[in-house]
Amino acid sequence: MNNFPTVSILFDKDVSLAQAVAQPDCLHDLNLDQLIDAITGPKQEYDLTPFFYTPLRDPDTVRYRQEVMRDLENESLIEHIKAFSKGMSTVRRYLGMAEKLDFEYHRMGWTLEAALVYCDTVMAVSPHLATDSLRSRGLRAIREYVEQYVSSPSFQVLASEARQVKQALEEVQYSVIIEGGKFRVKRYEGEAEYGIEVEKTFEKFKQTDAQDYLKRIPERSGMSHIEAKILEFVVKLFPEPFAALTHFCNQRFPFIDERIQTFDREIQFYLAYLDFIADLKRRGLPFCYPQLSAASKEIYLYDGFDLALAHAHRYNQQPIVLNDFSLQDSKRILVVTGPNQGGKTTFARMFGQVHYLASLGCPVPGREARLFLFDRIFTHFERAEDVRTLRSKLEDDLFRMHSMLAQATPESLFILNEIFTSTTVHDALLLSREIMAQLTDRDVLACWVTFLDELASLNEKTVSMVALVDPEDPARRTFKVVRMPANGLAYAMSLARKYRLTREQLKERLSP
Image 1 (cartoon, helix red, strand yellow):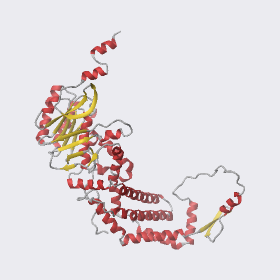
Image 2 (cartoon, helix red, strand yellow):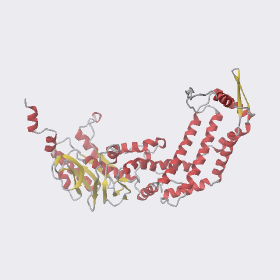
Image 3 (cartoon, helix red, strand yellow):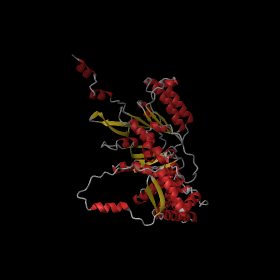
Image 4 (tube, one colour):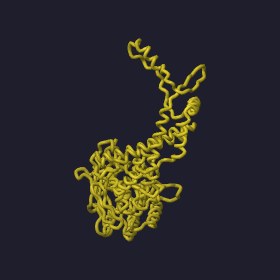
């Protein structure tokens, strides 16, 4: 099988694509670090985080993954693949346990068990991959490989020899004679099982069900020195099956095929994400496979939502508000204004999340989407002052923005959230206009949450989005963010009135 081309269900072209080791800087601001931890947490044995830390730039590779995701929405197929994964997990557990055992034949016994489970697992999944319903290039390629691998002479010999060795060992029968603090081992010669005879003798005296006084001894995988000595004598009595076991382990180990092992790990990327969104889909929240481009910057999302927020509220009945955005023609920058705690930051996170998840080939939260394949996402969210940097809040904001702009290209995404809040409105507007000019010159896509309404109509590349409130009660947030001109309202008075903080209310509360 060495002449079979390399098979990957994550990468259709460059299967040696370097996987990121470090977490991208943008993940924390977008709450994607929480999402990835929640997605990969149940499957820590597979080390999936490098896959989620590596966004793709090639539209065809992203579509390659989308195809696999669509195939795995077949419930029958996904259950069989999960059974395959469970079997492979058992194989690794047996082999890991064998490495820790002290006695040679005990180790080899568990290695044989691992080989038997491996062969059964691979043979069991093969016919379920041979379905005509597979449409993805990735799963069709692995189907072809598994079919050839299962029918290959090397696999057939492995499976056949493992079964023969197992059968020979199962035919070994022996007796242990314990006498005067000593024991001896002999071939079994049809001696009666006295335990059964004793139970039959006392059965007639039984009147009611007696209390169970049996002590539950914890199961263990190791072997005591006495058990090991018994096994040593058994090997001397039956040398042939144990010689076959030794030959099998020496000749067939390691027995796991590299491509099968790669498939087992890579398929977990899909299973982990689909398992994660399953509950949200059952709640009626929409997910879609977005159209993607690395060239066109005309983007849109309909009925999108913050996936991290939806996950946080998965156990309560709090409704998840859906929002849209779109940028057409020369428009590049969404400028989001509106009252505090109105959903602006959540909207900005949604903008970043859907682009990042789309670049991984995952379904994104939304009914329909067309998105851009970026080279890097730059985020600027408020951070607490760090005394180690010896920089003021404003200085730190400027330092971070300068660093991001120095690295940015026209293919970058920017997500800015309430920058320059530590200075005067006049200075904040002056600095923001300069940064807006830099973003415009680079023609980058951006979502900018700001308290400066003037930015919403600063040039022809901006689109104004406003977080709405209930018109009957301005203090109540709707968390809907819609496309409309900035209205200049901060709703401060309605908030002050709601919490009894107006001048009149304070005087009334403080009066003697």
